Every structure is written in C-alpha cells, then in structure tokens.
Length: 117
Length: 114
Image (tube, rainbow over all chains, first blue to last red):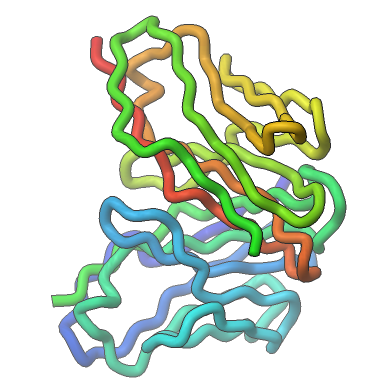
C-alpha cells in the first residue's frame, strides 16, 4: 500500500529565514505530486504540482518554490520567509491522470504547520 | 472555468441529527466528484467519490449521489456523531489538463454537540 510522509510536523521560523519542507511517497512510482497551503480557517490553495522529476508547475506567483529531485520526493522551499507564509502546508499525490474517480483521487499527507514570526 | 460551491458553515447539529451539506459544481465535461474530510490538525482524508452520473459514493454512513441534471453532489448522513465534527470539502477533477488537479470548494465546518 502507499503512504505519504511530510516533515517536519511543526515549524516556527523568523521572518527572513529560509524554508525547506519535504514530502515523500512510498509504495508507488511516477506519481503526480501537489503542494497546497491552507491559511487558518480558510480553504485549500494549490501552490505547485509536478507530473515528473524536474517538472514543476506553479499555480500562483509567490515567495515559494518547489523541486522534485527524485521520483517520489517533493520539496517546498523559500529563501526568505514572510509573515504571510504562515499556514498549514499539505502535500498530496495521485496516480497519473485517468478518467475514473479511482485514478483521479488525491491522497494527502499529515501536513506541516508553519508559523512565521 | 470549472468551480465548486459549498454551503457556508459552520453547520451545528445535535448528536443523531440528519446531516446535509450541499455541493454544486460547474464543469465543461463530466468530472469525477469527491468528498474529503479534515479533522482538526490533520490532513485531508478521502471520504467518498463518484465517477459518473447516478453513481453513489458511500463510506462510514455518509452518502452522496452524482446528479448531472442538477450538477450537485450533496453529502448526507442519517445520524451524526460528535466524532463527525470536522471540515468537509467537496471537489471535482479538472479534466481540462492532464495533470490530475482537483478543484476544491471552500470547505464546510460541521460541529456536532452531544
């Protein structure tokens, strides 16, 4: 079976410091990968998605970047954090896009709570 | 573009009450539809899903039927428990690109009181 891991679980960082959040998937190969942000009490915002190694698409311009150095590893980074980067960051994976709910389901990790002070 | 609209929350119910959370969608094609649940401090969990019109997804006493004629996928449960308190997200698959993206509604918070 497949599992998805995120770390760290919680992070408190000062404004202007760098950021690296990691997400790894086990039990599948060549998945689609996604980074979401959820501000307090708000919905989900898709930040980045990747359909393969080195292939990153950004959904919104921002202070963050993403990389996929290995097939099942997805990293979210920032060179200098802003207060507005605080939130709950969720990683998700899916099989390659298909035409059924089974193929199109996204599976989420436990999330990383980031507080920028 | 495609979109999902959920009823605004919070929805507050007493234990054993009947639950309905409305979800309607706009899509150019025939997407798959999903309900996810998020318990406090956790990631999202898939609750149920449906691939085509008239499909019924069900799990843990929750049900939702894919209604093409009304473009809806309302979530129902006959008798809620305190443990059902969570945020519920309706979503559809974005088939305009081959990326597997999902489009989410804004979420509906459910509070169940004993």
